[in-house]
Length: 322
Image (cartoon, rainbow, N blue to C red; front, top):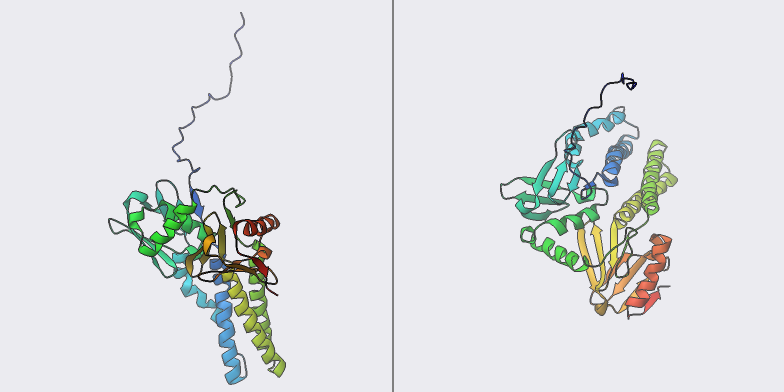
């Protein structure tokens, strides 16, 4: 009986046991577009303002003006502090900055959570703190809802506790990844509108720079005013677009990012649904007025479902303002 030929290759080694933690229940929120936009625009805006004052006083551009762009270098430590990623899983919440290990607080050990301006401050029983800026995170409003559902109710400040109770009421309705379900519809503006607002701001800065570098005339003054209006309008539109609207069985809830808050109106309190002529906004009239994003800003499928849902759920008339 012939022996099988020996295998000249090296024997297989047993693989090392995996010690990683499954990430199926983990979500990571990374820095969003607001931070990148601020890093890009801050040096330009400061330089334009200084150049405008210098040209108005001396009627010439200072030689040192290009070096003004280097002012962002001292801001690097501040950018390092706010450039953070947040990780949430079933065990706790973690915050990580570039070149720094993750800092984690388990959910049961969290003692207090409060809102300080745009920042959320989380503290445990031992005094360790995490400071998070939802406005600087991608999909920061979603992170806020996710975090409020996980933090123990006893640890929340009074405003955050009210917000968490509202989320608990609406959490029983299942939502599909597209944002729609039988009982609940959650909508956000399409990304193209965000890009349009950022493009308008960049165009305004470019126009202001051209006006400053050319001789002053009546036309240049008018163009500079136009650039300022366009810049302010673009910034306002970008802030307005950072919201989401939830339509469920209880009513309409609007979650805003700046200032961070959640407004709610019950269907029973609704007296009139008024759409703007362009259908970019919806104004709900009742015990108080509530304004939210309109169908024009949504994806086509959500646009159709929203119009049908308003007519089905609301007993108030739906009109389009002329």
